[in-house]
Image 1 (cartoon, rainbow, N blue to C red):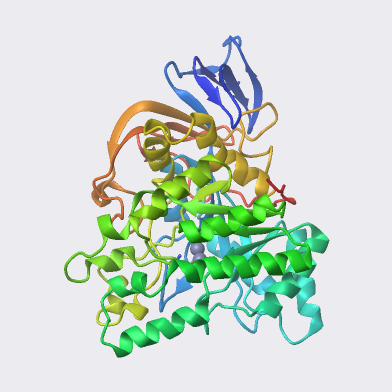
Image 2: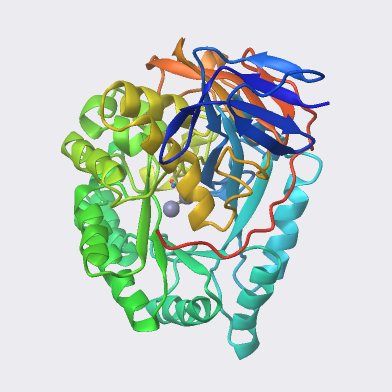
Length: 463
Ligand code: URP
Ligand code: ZN
Ligand code: ZN
């Protein structure tokens, strides 16, 4: 019949409740005290937390970038996510300049076909609205396919960056449709000028990637894009907020009542220039991602912003590249180091340890920022993001006492290093169910490759 999880504490964004959970088929059919176990497979969850499967809304799987392709394809990236307690992710389909959004959508669906181990949705990263007025109608077509969020880059000039007019026109359309614009906010052209000055002065080491991208350039872009969204009447979501300066711009916008939301990522909460960079040789290349690591003084304000709902989501921006043969493309010139780092496997562990165990947030807020708010903002709630009757049976049995050390040698992500090497955490996955199927136990993926389904998302909520 079904699978019954007994004796655990079911956690949502608002409460923790001692309750059993019955999963029948792909859905949750009952949540309550002492459900009759007759005929069901029983999972003893005494002492465990029963969580909605994690949702990571910011990954880059199998993505061509920086002269190479991100190291985790859909199989390896989603397998690693599952092992870490994430049952849904939203990846970025990247529009090629000169080609239509439909082309990117088809390409990314193909990349995932027969490979995805968990469910996944797609954002559309818009790089070109074309000369022909009809191209903007592709936004409507994407919404019909379940892509209800559109990413634009204010950084990476000449590669992915779009101008303000493009952002504004996109926002005019998304506001009409009720869709969301997600923004990589950094002033790309000013950063490029700083970068060229650094290279001309012989500053070519990986550390200069971080030193040439000031926090004010991030804050300026947030400020500008908020203004554009206000002009267009659009909702906006700032991705990978990395600094106090940028976060304060989100806070100011929200204080004014604007529909502005944001995320930060685990790396900005637990790593810093002082603690993790300035290593000998080429080691710092492991930490070359964008925005870069910041000074440690940014961490507390970011934690507070996550706790106080200035930022609603914690994602990973998982964009892995191997050190040995991919990061080394930038030996002698930091601008040629592929930008990105691995993290999809460790988000839940790090947020539980550094958030809940270290007293920075409640376990309910942990669930809210890792699952419930992502589901709500990105149009998947209550199918995903909550342990409730009728929801998909995406459930993590979480052992709050399990101790674990993060190491590249034992991780599932396909990189030859971990940016969290040696980090000790208490609290880890015991079992993961995806649509009622046991897919992870004992740190091993038990499901079949390709079982993951595309999630056709609806319109999201403004939180
Ligand atoms: O360094 C990063 N973050 N690479 C992925 C692309 C992006 O900017 O999100
Ligand atoms: Zn970005
Ligand atoms: Zn990204």
